[in-house]
Length: 436
Ligand code: SDX
Image 1 (cartoon, rainbow, N blue to C red):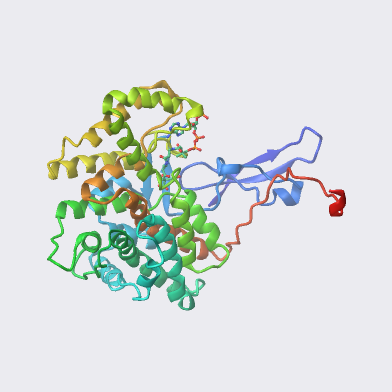
Image 2: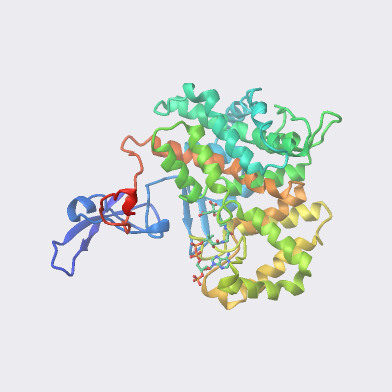
């Protein structure tokens, strides 16, 4: 970051001493006011629950322009990456800052492929769960459990150790997600097959059985690979901020990523894809397109607590570029599968059209986000609804790891420790129980 000529001057109406605060500029996006010395100089904290106006770090990985609806991974527009690259090239870009050349891509793919198996002991963790356990409950457990296998070989201050932990996590997430799925359907786990692509291998581990050869569909393979690219990273969202805060204590990367999985599960965040599909199912069951008006009315009634899931975003005040690409992928996949008249896709597009013409949504700049269409295409691929967020976690692991390594790689990083505005009871003495 570079210092800006202009400074911010804080003045106090009670005649307190003015405070000068430096302003820094990044490559793009809003400048920042450096308040690190504010408490020392004024004895006061800033107050920003939900971090509506707070930059928690500096980063060179992902840039979002919420007004334009623009998303760049290391400067490359998501539209170009989703069309011209595959997920492992995108992983290389997020981790190392550059797209790989031919040799680098071959080596990186080989490295990831050779780490896709998990320790045989991992399967015994699954047995503790009920068969109908939510896959994200299983994933939160399994990813945290990886610490037990690598904790002693991951000195996070050693860049080589950090890199191998990154490769292990990217490589093993598909295996773990497929195991979580197979466990819930009572089928045997399928081992990774090294001759398959990253997405192809995941489809194999999900849908193959020992009883017959499984042929990976190139259409589904490409669609899944694009879904992974679209979910790979997204600046300082809730789960990425969780991973950074958790990792800032010096814990091992597996524990920090497990914290990210747990946070992503929430319906306001990654859990919205599952919630959005269930919302479409509910509207369909209630009568479909002609029931949309009634549903929108419920959404606008604050007491209903009903939200239009897959809509709205803290940063995007325009169309989420990933939602556009996801809608395109929906069209392609449904078309290839002869499902172009899929009622749920039609319902989603009708719902989007009505919402985008409704003053409630327009005035609040609520547009479809990445989660609005992703469920429809995942369902068309054959992925069960409860697994949608686990797929999101699978894809976002590279972003979490890249952001964690960026933080730990900065020699000046500190443990994150926010303060508070205390509104509790002033100091008082404990009375004997007879007087309470
Ligand atoms: C992801 O941060 C990221 O980058 C996340 C993510 C990533 O890649 O990591 O992009 C992934 O999490 C996408 C978002 C998925 N969540 C949903 O689709 C759930 C539904 N959306 C909302 O819960 C909401 O839009 C949030 C949580 C996404 C954003 O909430 P904000 O920024 O805190 O905004 P808000 O709740 O203060 O909403 C502002 C207004 C409110 O109304 P008023 O108080 O002004 O009257 O808009 C309303 C909200 O009630 N509103 C909605 C709405 N989203 C916001 N009303 C109906 N339906 C919605 N979906």
